[in-house]
Length: 438
Ligand code: HAM
Image 1 (cartoon, rainbow, N blue to C red):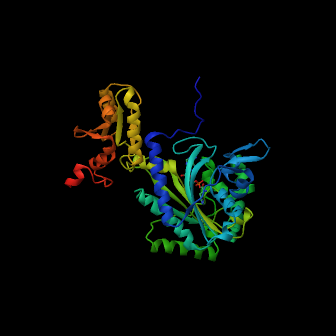
Image 2 (cartoon, rainbow, N blue to C red):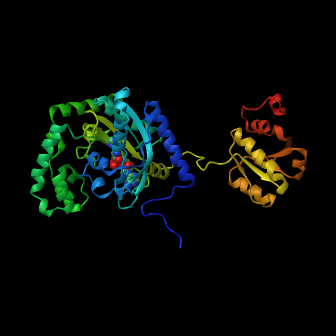
Image 3 (cartoon, rainbow, N blue to C red):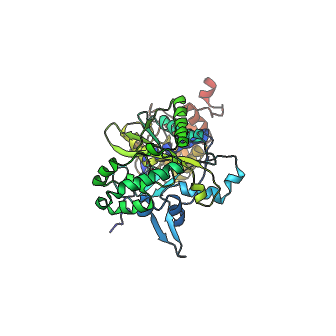
């Protein structure tokens, strides 16, 4: 019996794989424009990193991590997010001491969370994100939002909502957590067992509870905005006025707290519902973290960042017809050997064309010529290069334009220059007839 794929994971193939590359390449280019550098941390880290970094009160750490003992009995976890690993990378490689601050990094790769699979929610998915570490200003928070917004605009996701809030400085959050404890204490016996744990570990996490009856209780809970210190309010107002000046549209949502424990001050998310009504949840989110680096053994510096779910970006782009044409990667040239004796020269033709930068496929099967043409058409080829016995004997090739159906025979060493001219490229060696004519 065949072995199936692991539940909650999926195979990304064909056009979808090409679309992922398109999205990731575009995101990388924009990150480079903003002077972020790519980093590639390992997929697994010691579990303690996430327990201390993401926080033991978060659902991610409590319920969703793929954690196992390795053969040396060390507890290892497949990353459930990037941020903690990037902090470890920055601290361990002493990047804060040896680089200009902030250290600005971007990353892309698989992330693992044991969640209930549903629309836009997988157990292995791809995140793309950035972290800027070593600066605590409202300006750097805003730069990350502008970067994310530029990415979304470049993908033509114009109907995105930027949802923003502040969860304040340490003092604000301490006062708020105390207010939440006092409030939830009255209802705790009616709430789910998870909320009892959240109550003990971090009452802020009760606000994320998905149980409908608990949500009714959450609706009446104190609001963060009433517990903000003057300094936190002032900082948030600065963020908002910078966004206004940069003409980034946003909605302030005072219930947004984000589900990971490391956040402080500015938090934000990007929401997008596709035109067919599919709601994949947040396509991205992030925020400021004041104490995470110190918590993980580094210096006392702040950071800010966000991550996009590439799978969700792909889904909304696909739903709304916003993926560019040609992602099925058509070939340019199909090389067709006719008979055993022509295979060697045909392979040389394919190699030469590929080395000149053409996307070339080769017919490996001994099928009839008509069948080869059908294959060339299905693959989107513009030209066929045909090599039979005569061509081998004369060291020639036939080039057939599959659109006009015209064909010419040229010496093997003129193959590339002739194809260049036919394609309208500028790499022609100048010796061919059409080049001289032009
Ligand atoms: P997060 O909100 O947990 O934040 O995840 C970021 C994005 O990953 C989400 O907005 C969503 O698009 C995608 N995502 C999350 N879970 C799934 C899933 N099960 N299936 C598919 N996509 C999913 C973080 O991970 C933070 N590290 C972001 C950050 C960076 N904060 C500061 N810096």
